[in-house]
Amino acid sequence: MNVQGREPHFVQSFDRGLAVIRAFDADHPELTLSDVARACDLTRAAARRFLLTLADLGYVQSDGRLFRLTPRVLELGYAYLSSFSLPEIAEPHLERLVAEVRESSSLCVLDGEDIVYVARVPTSRIMTASITVGTRFPAYVTSVGRVIVAHLPQPEIDARLDRARLDPLTPRTVTSAETLRAELTRVRRQGYAIVDQELEEGLRSVAAPVRDRDGTVVAAVNIPVPASRNSVESVRRDLLPHLLAAVARIEADLRVTRTRP
Image 1 (cartoon, rainbow, N blue to C red):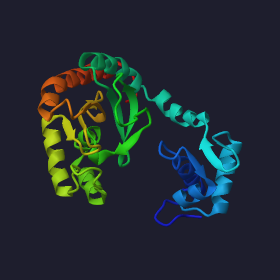
Image 2 (tube, helix red, strand yellow):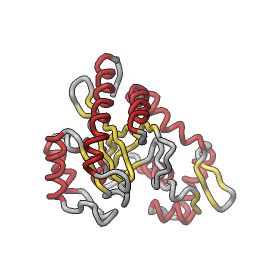
Image 3 (cartoon, rainbow, N blue to C red):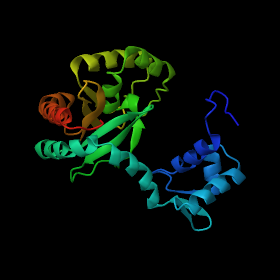
């Protein structure tokens, strides 16, 4: 049966099955049948069928009441990462960058309205946010998201801003589409983005775009730091030059590597 607003080829049951998998996250590693039904807007009977099918396939396990994902779910993401060689190319450069600045660094790509971490090199410092490969955040409120979106064609930027839900995640979050539009213009002009405690209070982040051999921005690299010991000016003065140099090395490798970015 076609779903209103979808193409004729759209398979609604497959969409709902993926929604069941996405219902589990870091804040909800275990869910009851009712939790899944509510999160996915399904009847309990439908949620039960999806969960039991996923269990038969080895993607979900249950103790009879609580359901949780199994490590087999990682196969779904690994299929993407194994064919997407940019993280492999970037990782040694991230490691060098982290050694230089003694802060964590990550490579992210844009996926819909979110950014997704596809490579990460942490430091021993404990950050308030638990970030791993696969972590997602809204693009509008992150330095990597802004630096990628800023380099999209203007009609796409306008469309994104028209449909965006700019929820205030902290008191500093930009929630005005016009203010964000101006910020994206500035980011595109200067070639980097700094986000100051908009995603999480006490966290500042700087990011720069990664371009492929054709000059298209395909990803971004960031350095997040605690605001308590890094002013915006020190981020710009002390971290940004190292970040830009690391990105230049990644892009140089992309130009000479036969890879799909």
